[in-house]
Length: 69
Image 1 (cartoon, one colour):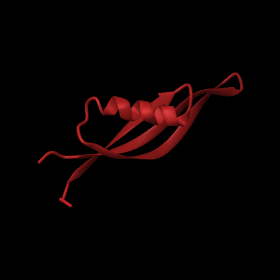
Image 2 (cartoon, one colour; image 1 turned 90 degrees about the horizontal axis):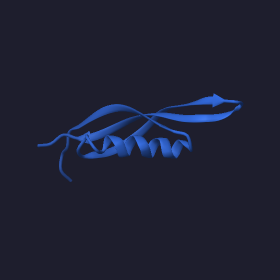
Image 3 (cartoon, rainbow, N blue to C red; image 1 turned 60 degrees about the vertical axis):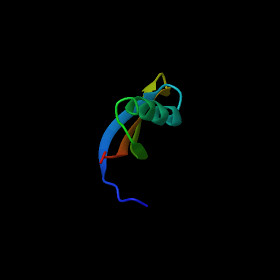
Image 4 (tube, rainbow, N blue to C red; image 1 turned 180 degrees about the vertical axis):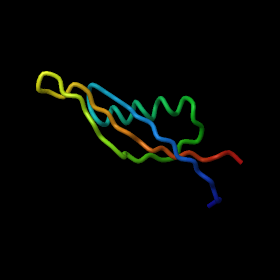
């Protein structure tokens, strides 16, 4: 296994459907501009309540990506 150096970034994803979709949305968007994404960690979960129901899910993620040689 090669030695790698990683950088972490914090991103926030949201979805009207689920926490999983909020995670997927955040990673899909980040992967468009950040190369070599390798891992993620959910650090916070939040939501918005509308009319007594969940109106929106929101997650904060730390993503790790490998720095290029």
